[in-house]
Length: 376
View 1: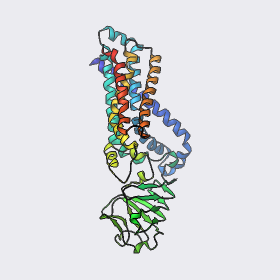
View 2: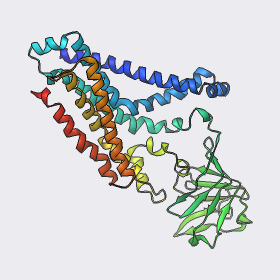
View 3: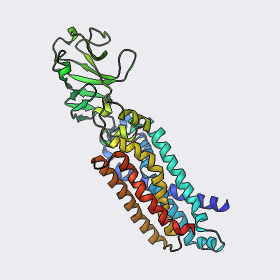
View 4: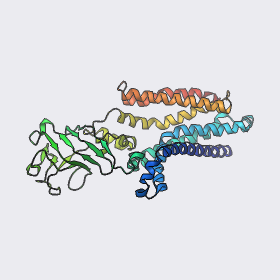
């Protein structure tokens, strides 16, 4: 137990040092490149330090999610290399303590970090997803972005528009092309602006179109219902709307409509599974790939650590700098293998499930083979 506490304490210190150093370097460079935007937003954001703290505080959580596996390996390498440098590793081996016994605390700590990162992805990041939207050039969320046409696959309505704004979920000059099944209502619906509204007691989730110019006299047209479901509401059946407005029900959220990657990157796994089963969205291969990838990510994080440990505690262990250099090469190979398998899945060369599990099939046996001398 004394050895476990000693090595774990050293690894925690190394993890904090590496994490703070990498995050600090990344954020300082980013802040320096975007300092003018932060200064311009400081007055309405409560001061420069408050703006910086809020912007990078949320991104620190996202940074942990992206780098936890690599930093866990780096911290294990530094902690065990520190033992080697001070001849403590030689003393432990001379005392009859096995290499596995020395490496065990590092492996357990890597497993703890992997599970913490998994909990962060499922619980924390979905709650702060909206705070991670945008970038330093759009801190207030009021910058207009070009709108790309996108289908609601359930209703077959093609959403078009001029541009969108993140802060109030607004679409400028939306033009909705209706399918032939809705030809009795209109060929298309043009409006001055459209705004996404969440579901409440008066309507489902969808888009409120204001200043409707096509079809003309929208207030005199009855609501459109297909299969017992109201697709387009007008004032004839919904007096909560202003004159010249209509409401288009849609299960495609604003983030999904504008093609933002945040909704899949920072949504929980249950939300991603519901999105896959939602016929309105028409998800591509990257969403089921992400679901499977989250299942295997803790295993891959642990395998990455096991791959690197023999470099410092194995019978043919190298010097500190050689071991660190070889661990960087191993990490690059590990990441390239994972990204390559994911690219095959998103290109529809292999299925999303195979693209996510293939790195485990390739890298886990490699990690077990690499770590075999430690068991002896």
